[in-house]
Image 1: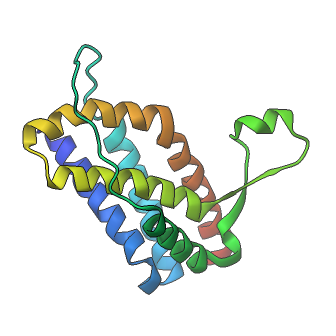
Image 2: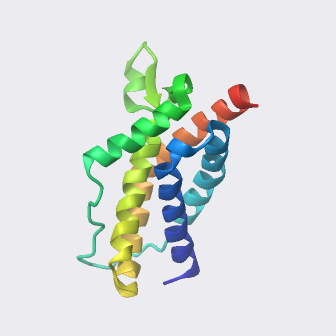
Length: 166
């Protein structure tokens, strides 16, 4: 396993811990932590190894149940209050709509939590060889699905921090 892969797993674990303890967090501290952590996660995930030629049966198992996801989402929503909702401009449906499309910071953070929680849980029980086999899949999943969510939430958190918390 490379240093970047280890760093990515450490960041994933740190992110999960931050969301799991959101209930005890101060709002400003939580937003600052997310603004520091999300760019680092983006860089680490984007730098994961890609292997377009590998054929593997390795996959990230789903470990997060719906109730836990919802509990995480609700904790963050309660912490952010009225600042949880923002207008989303990168939604595919936006180009066909005359009305703004709302999104939720808490849902975006919970979606990222779900991905990273599953990765962390899979890594805890996997051999280093299996983890190495998973990294291209994790990179592809990041590139195709949750990288945009991370960017959108980061933009919304930036707005919250610099318009309401400073």
